[in-house]
Length: 517
Image 1 (tube, rainbow, N blue to C red):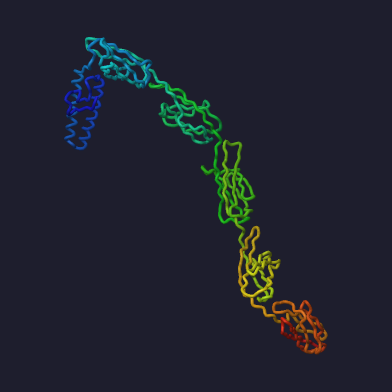
Image 2 (image 1 turned 180 degrees about the vertical axis):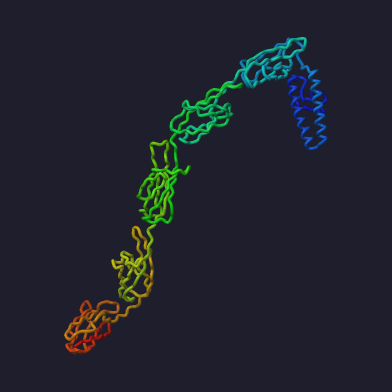
């Protein structure tokens, strides 16, 4: 059978696109399809206002009707011109299996038309091979089928009847995982001969539902090993064998996510930490959160507050949860935060002493609130390394002249006061006498103490002390640079002279003491 040619066909068979060996039902089916096609062409041409295409479609429909009318009256498919026998070669045929029949006569194989019909709409025909007398068929549903081999009117048609059985088709679970987790969605597909089919799936005698020809989505709510079964009712084509499979449902593995609020963390601060399920975002209660050396448990909202007791650039924040009563396993999570010391400040409040070689400077340090700061480190680029006392002071003994850079800093376990740097100029040392202390007023006959140092503040030993009102008398300073003497017993204003002449000095200094009556 070929394509219909209603405009150019030379015979009714060519017009309808069939052959003389086709059965009348086959020819009628071809006629109906051709008429449907040309009616569609006619409507389309009418919508396009194409008169030429419209006339061609009308002519084709008329030719199809005329050809069918002739064939319906005159068609007589070829048959054998001798007595024949039809035998079915295939034993116990099943749906979709190739069924072979053989037609023979007195002289051997016979070429003729073999028709296959059933009680419904089956009407197939094929012509036997002239050399073998064989023809083949295939059937899409079960049931009885009659074969008829056509002969001429002088002989009886040969017939045979077979029963086509359903095929046995094994069902199978397609791409079913061996293991899933509790609450994990699993797609269950049942296939027959590689194609997804509509099957009923059950597990532990509980009906899970039907696949609907594609897939069934199911979520297991508890752990265990489940025996899955898939069944499908027989149809016209096949009997379906049950599919079985095992699936292991394990504890749900839930990834935890930890988040720390805020930034710029300092020791002794308190931070809020949130613990949630990574995928769903749901809060995780009763999770253990460890921050440094502190551990606490999250509330129903998945939150916990923890103090910052450890400093560092990467202080670990770890979270774990274990709950044997649930069919789930929580996967630990961790992060880290940078925790710094509390920030404070300090500065140099005063530098006391002569800024000269051989002298001693006293550096006084206070904090940002002006309070004396004990324990601050006072260092210099000359090698000093001192610590402030309870008065916030540290002494620096000078052994050279030039620029002196002083650095002050302090850091405790919890507070960073920062640092401050100050540079001062230290002068070259030229030793001179200094009357560090002397009384200004005395009564006659009183004792007076004079303290003699050099200009670096060092005590001067063996300096001579004389009074203008006590001629002939001389006193000498001791190792502490001090000397005590009795002033004149007469009122007046004597001049006290301090003098020392040796390798370091060639100097003298004077002061006056008023002696009151």
